[in-house]
Length: 283
Ligand code: NDP
Image 1: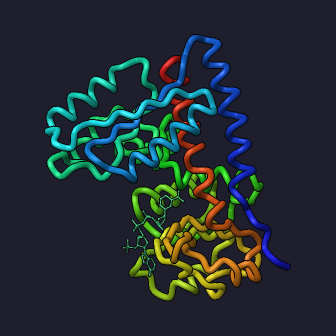
Image 2 (image 1 turned 180 degrees about the vertical axis):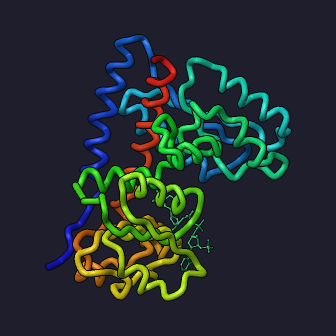
């Protein structure tokens, strides 16, 4: 039997409804949830991303301001500007687009961004909160989007074997902690893992976050497993995931498509975090 296709659209619609209801409730109390996206220098990719996030935010009633700063700005000036945004009570969530120009160190800036406004987990305080199971934190949007999808589609997690391929701070590591938080038995794989297909075949839930087009063939998948494909890799004029989806469908029980899967949900997670930040800052 072909695998169930776990599409992102329905999950995104449900999140939109929840977000809109929460935004209305906040507005009723005089709070207008607002996101500030900071871009330093000419960065067309960042601007494209920011504009599409703004469009989506405004559809949900969330304010979104894009702040474009000169690429020649010094680190001290950027830090001062960021501190001003931290202290601005009209801004609830802040995203600092990366990469930053070379005179501005990410390692300095990430500690300046106030953790309570850091809606995309840039400040290590928020990474630490995932480890501690502290629900006041903000996990990165992508692994959180995977969790939203698993929850929406009612995929059983407690006591299940989860294998995460990838150990980046943006996806793999926080993903493993979020799955552990749902009582999965988690294995994290990387480029030095021995016999990756055999390790992956243990998984009831397999998360691929590698960045290698179609690397995960059906030989990596246990019959009936849930496969969450985080990869976004250019192939010709389109994008493909880290999983070779069509053949994998014959083995998996459920699988996310690329495009139309996890990526569809990530911006909604960011907006959900802006609403959460606004609530926490006004409770
Ligand atoms: P990174 O390049 O930071 O990390 C890739 C990870 O994959 C590393 O841990 C690396 O291991 C591991 N890896 C690489 N090659 C192999 C291999 N042959 N076998 C096993 N493991 C391997 O990528 P990201 O975590 O940032 O992103 C992963 C993918 O997710 C990319 O395709 C990216 O485009 C996509 N992505 C999707 C998002 C979405 O919204 N859907 C958002 C963010 C990213 P090692 O540590 O040993 O080098």
